[in-house]
Image (tube, rainbow, N blue to C red; front, side, top):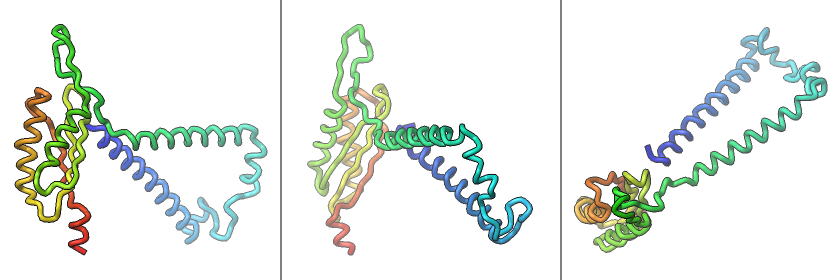
Length: 195
């Protein structure tokens, strides 16, 4: 599974958990406001903080240090989550020689991605191309984003990308297959044409 898919799955899981906590808090507040369980939740007109609860932090010396420690942990987890969002999973180098006894041939992954980009950029109807090799260096896959003109023939373009550009990349990397995620997007001219 790619790093971006792992990140997306983690994001969905965290957002679902946060949503469930907020939903439960909202349900408790609604139940208290409607006096559904007054013996458990209290009367709707009663204050939320009882005098005993208001005195609790002052009576327990460990309370505020525990709040501070929890805040620091939450901050560090939040920073880790933000850093995870920036990971692309892009490969830096590709080893083209599996037998190290015969030598090592290393190719910068950007060079291979740039070759695909330069190839596809010459096709009719293509405005802009971005290619990134991701995954493990021994079995990379390609993430390819192509902005096309509004009058581009998408079937022909897709066939040419698969038949020419990806075939050249597979040959250069000496791979039988290279899994590819291809995103074809219409450029701003198409958006203006539709408006």
